[in-house]
Length: 77
Image (cartoon, rainbow, N blue to C red; front, side, top):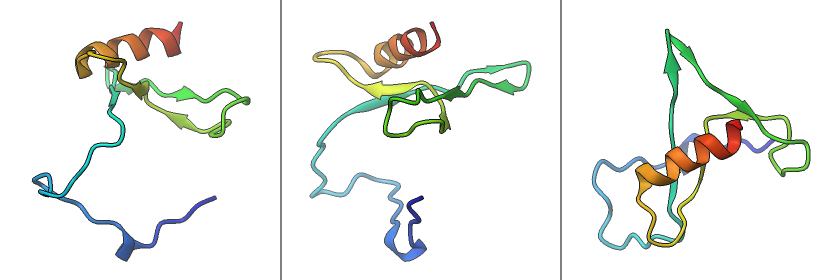
């Protein structure tokens, strides 16, 4: 398990001027009657057996909202 040292994490309210996007991702939280949808990663993935929300990389010219919706349906069947 990787542990992040608290001093190594920085949180910004505004994107720093020198920030360069390497990859764009989208994720969504699904709340139904105060129950949060979490998906367990496939054993074949590097994150095997970990839990998370539906998420993934944006495809070419895809809006974040479209990517989140696509990922939700791809990952939940």
